[in-house]
Figure 1 (cartoon, rainbow, N blue to C red):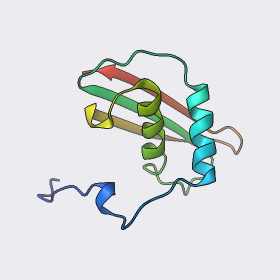
Figure 2: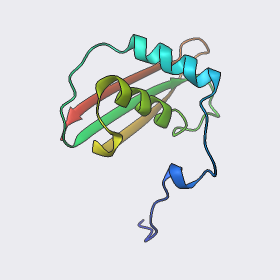
Figure 3: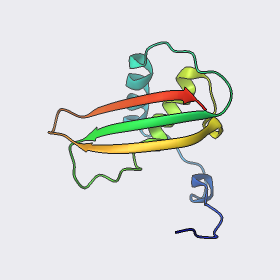
Figure 4: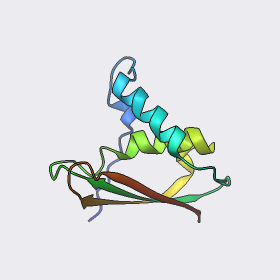
Length: 106
């Protein structure tokens, strides 16, 4: 199915400034400290994300933007370079949550 509608940017959804919460600042710090060194080349990228979530009610897209923002910050690319994005949600027990990712050039 194809909808002939211009996609809406998240930047067009909110009015006024958005501020990072303490929870997000703590998450960002933990992610940035955990990510191992890696070289991401400039150009078109493919990103595969796999989230292990303990809540079956969690939306698959909610963890995407905050994590991608951390990847950009750590590896020095811009998310506009991502031309292919695949996202998987895996049900896991509480306390067993995880994030897996793979970045490749197209």
